[in-house]
Length: 438
Image 1 (cartoon, rainbow, N blue to C red):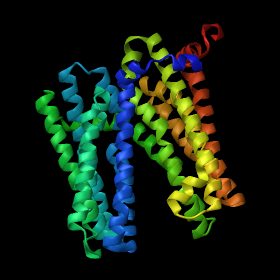
Image 2: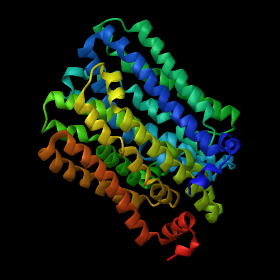
Image 3: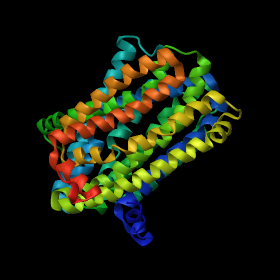
Image 4: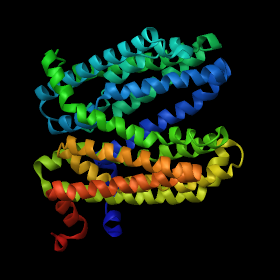
């Protein structure tokens, strides 16, 4: 298998659209992380640790509502665009319907926050900051990342993302100087992103000749209805991946929480690998699945083996470099954080095991099956995490998170074998040879 991976020439790597997608998606994530690291000390110095914590808390609330605004269109949108890349009329209908649906959801999310804040007196400590953060909901609604992902033209959106983050950085340097101005932090982040998104939509209209049509309200509701399972899948997956720290908070002190949080944040960055691979190859995989099944399975095999190789190398490097990584970030030696990171370093590799299963279900548009595996993963994670964390603390939680990745891979494979035999045998034959066919 390794020799087949390495036979893929350097020239083909550079020109391959899926590789370009992966590179630009990685560039977007890397720039987001870098800007976050640069802005953090600037904000702490300007508004103080307390206000900085409230700004981040508001951002966490908004990010949760952004799952509602996204409503699974990050999964269904690229497929629809990829299949209709050369059909301007269908692309116009798709982008109009999705942007309109997400805008409606952004309005619903904003109204929900206002009712919760002023009707039920929630978020009292950071109410003003949260209200000023709702621009982020509309920047999510107008972000056409899914469109360029489906078109396999990621260069523009990646450059635009960096530009908006640099505008945000310039904004906090120019306008955020004291604690009372903390409310403007997320406002600037959302405002700059929304402005850049509107310019990109203008480019799509004028340069790509895509029309924006006001869809009928019934079509919007029909679109939302079709995507509700993907939304619920995203929601429970978010809980499964990010809920570990909440579980630990019931059984550990602040010091343990801090040391685990450091290791978990590093792991969450590394865990972007399988997500980036899926997002990068999803458009081309969708087209191939519709037009040429054998080519689809060959393409999926190459991508899968590459992802496993990268995941394994990343895991081994992180395991060996754990003491240096922790010391570089914490400025001191934290043995518990090193122990947590060494165990969690294999989470990205185990997550990569499920890439082929997820891609297969996505290209076949199996929303119900994706939802079923997602909520079963969430239930398993909560049960195992609570059990192991109550007995073994942070170390127990680490092994619970590892076992969750193994569980979701085994469960997805099992369900695909019984419900999508064409996917199972097609990929198995491509991976191991037709002599193993069932």
